[in-house]
Length: 104
Length: 326
Image (cartoon, chains in turn blue, cyan):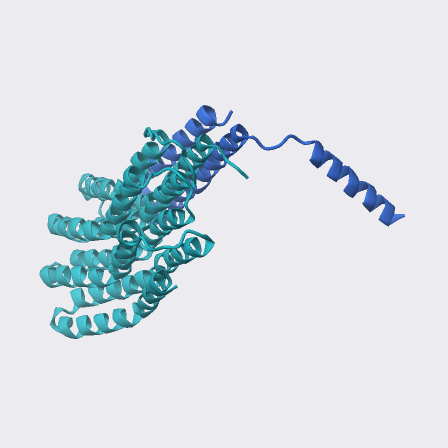
């Protein structure tokens, strides 16, 4: 019973695979653009995440020890985080470029 | 599977740009965040110095962001520079992906490493506001040395992009391009982070004990020098692969041996670079506190760093064996 069920599933998958269209060059180019966009934004998100988190942690520590300067410390944290964000924006822009210019 | 020329080219462009921009920004962002955090700590101690500390932080972050700018420029070039080849094949793919690997991996170390001295300068500026300009001199010098592996990687990426895009699909040429990219890129990570750590410790020492500034500065440059050796090995092997080697057999064995050499020399520098950096950082800090014991500390640092570099030398030997004996 189980073996006949398995046999049906396997034969149906093989049929579907043989009926699928062959991979064309245009498909591969689009696939490359899509994977490239994924690599670009996927790894590009690591850096700003870690860096901005470290800055936020240090800001919390500083405010805990000197709460009267909270405004100044928060402002500095945001400025530093904005600079760190810039590389993430580069990755985002190029990932979107690749997606919409080459991914169709 | 037979791929058309246009397919090889576009695959190379997109994956190369993805690697360049994806990996290249990581280090700079982490380093810039570190600098921001230390600046905040400094402002907590000395709110009166906020404008000086903000300026120091922004200057340090600006130098630290240069690897990500290189990565952006090279990534856009990889994506858009016109390459007229008939017929394009695997060689173009490997050259473009190799360039992406070179600057992507190469930007990791330089960017992250530059965050340490920038943060330490903010810390030093808070502790000794009158000595801030001398501390910043130390920061800039330390950051400059930290950036040099990234410069090697940029040069190799440019060479791959503009001189190695050739028609055809030769496994040997593909292996050489990918191997050169890996060798110079991956070998930049350890030395970059390590030199940055050494500079961070030295700049922290300059901030806390300003009297011993010159001897700490000297110790920083020497400590950073040892950290840079794996990056020199990586750049050397990359240049060998790009300009000297032409007796590589044109089959899967040839591809495997140069690609393997790239991996060996590239990743072999990771550990020694970081370890020597930790040694340099502690040594500079200790020598800043006790300048009278500077000679003894420097000898210990150099001995320790030399032992730490041993595995990088083994990696270089294996890489050269792979390339010349097999």
